[in-house]
Length: 275
Image 1 (cartoon, rainbow, N blue to C red):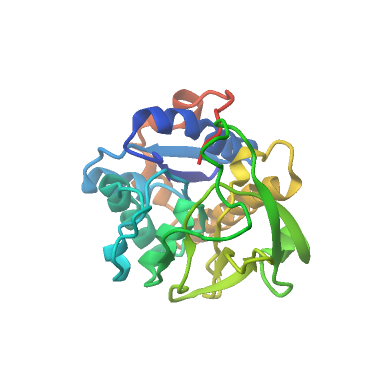
Image 2 (image 1 turned 60 degrees about the vertical axis):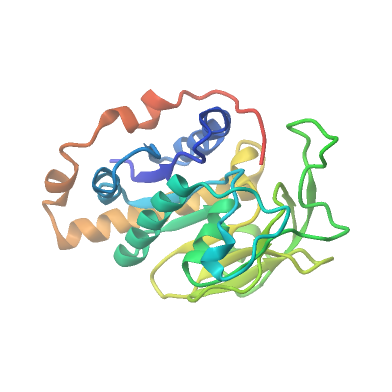
């Protein structure tokens, strides 16, 4: 059985989510997973039941910004509006991932959401000569790239190799104070912007990347490996849970709503690229 990966709709703006989702879902399918798409209008009880039936979690990007009140800061003039529905669902997903020790991958906004939930803070608007966000005068789909240096003793280095890698970039915020249970594993070398964090708890795989591996997972080996690692960890979680509770498949999954499975909800199509 393929591992099920829970993924929330990226944003309350349906047009944005429809445009952005296929890259995430197609990347998960290609890596061997069965994505479970969670609508932002689910009740907490409905969301909790769907999440319980999953083996791993992916927190995608979003055009929203995390409410700075959550980390005790005043709003910057360039901080985008928050998306409370996405925030609420992320909180449920993060609680489940940490309580059950499910593998967790955060991408861009998802990494920032993870960090704030763990008690960290954010740079609300990056001021740097390094381009981290698509300029306003460039069309959607314009690719920004820069270098990131990966820590040699990190789990991420096992996927990327040591030293510098090239990452795409589409964000105006980043991690400032690192949250509890997380460590910095990659930075932009020219300005020190944090590009990746990973969990420090033994036996619990948590990775947050500031770039967008879903956008080039079909052509970039490092991006493909990141999704394959999430799926590999989800398989291991599934087997471990099954060993301790042999009947969990029937108890927890017999009522799975098949409409949320990728093959029905997200055909393999191209997605227009955006932050």
